Length: 219
Length: 211
Image (cartoon, rainbow over all chains, first blue to last red; front, side, top):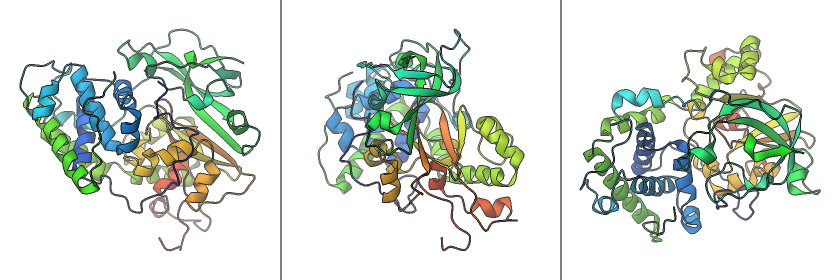
């Protein structure tokens, strides 16, 4: 979706400021929110793409004015309600009130924590031969799906070069909407800064994205 | 998927937003605990891991090893996930970690313009600035300007390569080893490796400079 989350190339957000000695969390609720999202994901209530889609789907004014973990909490609440794990009235009352859907993997318990500290695997077995090889020129398609995609707007329509082939991986555009993993080849595609930002751009800049094969066409 | 409900921002001052958020998160945790979907001890253990075990010290050990062991460096560039998992003394890396090496000709910088993708196992949870609009918007269009904000100046001819983490690949920058560290041990070198030097928004510390 063409949301405000797709920020690459936007102007006006001001300077980047690093907080010296930043703590891991700025408040206890941030830590609990992070842990709840990880735990419910691990319990099988949703995949990583769906959880990203729910944060992107927050209203643009809410997205921009909410802190990072507030977006996580709002996205989690909406997802759990939409998927039937929690009832909206329960969120309002702050207690479990009725029978709701149980996460596919059941209760997330302490003995499972170690498992989720290492990233999951997104690599899948090959479905078909890869269409592109490193060194080939490709154009990022001009697509504007209203659902989740990982093709940022700032590369759409532009020509780049395939640099790496990362293998066949879960396709977020499908996984986010419950349409299955639909694995696709994943490539690193590198663009010249002037191709993306015009002739006046810094000639020393190159930008790459990781692009799934359906995002690309020969150029 | 349109969500008008419950997304309203009430423009409270910082303090009351904090307590409002505390109440909301506690409520959700109570619901999920009462339903038997999660147990608080599991949440505590997740938080503890990110507060104590998983942080930039992991990436620093990997970088220091690469600086001192050419075979390890070669293996790291070829397949970072596999190389990291041979070490045993840092957190295990999952799929799919890629190490990108800085050279005098090329400086690498990592961003996630769409959300906040970051090599958690190597660097811990990302800092606020990495997840915020100024960095996500500008890193791909004006990386030199971003580096200037952070007090970093690169030679004009140095190529800047920005890696936008748009899939499940995670990038770790392998910074250049500081001069004046000949004969240093891996442990000493690891002390020089900063979080930001592994994102590409900073350099390692220089020997003898005040930290």
